[in-house]
Image (cartoon, rainbow, N blue to C red; front, side, top):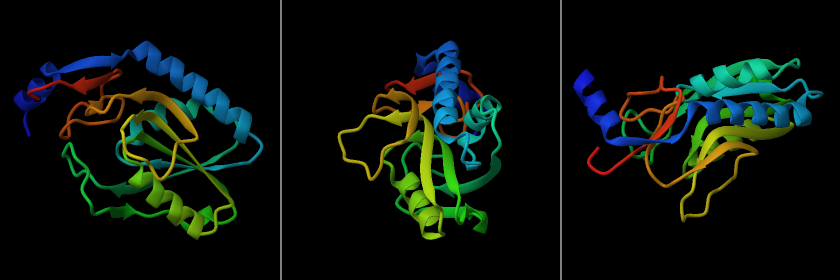
Length: 183
């Protein structure tokens, strides 16, 4: 990995969501979450590393009592295609038991990762599971779940920015971009 490769990826991409639209969508999503969960004292879990930026943008808008922690389940390992094997780097804590749990992630692609998270959290005794994602990829394949809250539907292309990476690069962008041919 190097600077030139990162610049090559950027030059072979296009902006599909502006920074202003990202901020407006996160504000709207926060209002919907607040309306539904502000009386629940939820446990909010961020899926590292992709959801770090989305979480940092969303949490300040959730102006009600909550508990925060993180989990880490990965399939990508700095590639642009998900692998079949899921790897728990940080599993949910026992504190999910009898709690309303909101899981934050950057993107819902095929839904396999979020479904695995949901299944584990519910098996550990959570009272209720909800999910919020910045993006949901529109694909022709049926998914095992749909997010409860979603900022944007994005095309079936590799997208990055706002915490999502392209081959390990560009998580730091305030916009959402999609790779074009030749990237």
